[in-house]
Length: 166
Image (tube, rainbow, N blue to C red; front, side, top):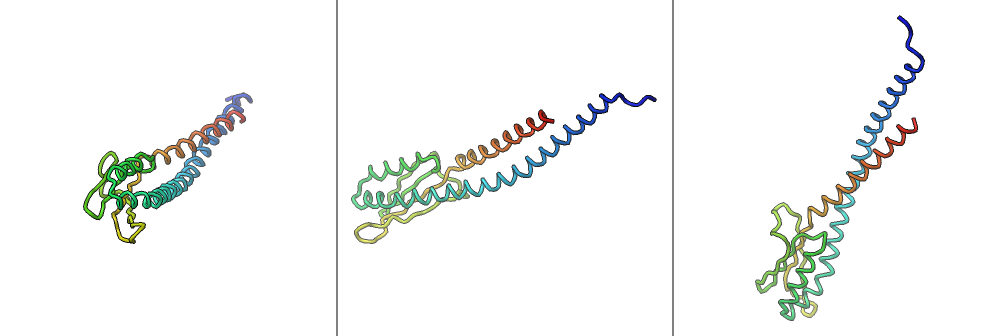
């Protein structure tokens, strides 16, 4: 049997080399992509927690003034505005007198991580009500998916460039 032609041997070596490059690049993408997604998950979760905390704290004074002055429309406008923020899914203000003001698509599921803030009067230091904010899970999920897609696209381009250079 005749030995393979030198160009055929080079093609086989090149083919094996490209297969290994793609395999190693895929493994790197999975490993580093997984790490990147984990880090992004933690970062996005912290960002949303901080944003909900900041929004809640900054809304307390306006809501306290509106509740103290018994301005029902002002309270509802503030609640509606809060529900329109991309990080917030659902909002409820419970006044000490029993009135409730809500905004958002629907009452959150029991497992939702609703944050509560006491609304304290600026004048008498008494409790006027409670502000409840529920983060939007879809917003959180969309931010994570953007990171995942970005990592995958980056590695696909990287792998394609390596294969073209080889």
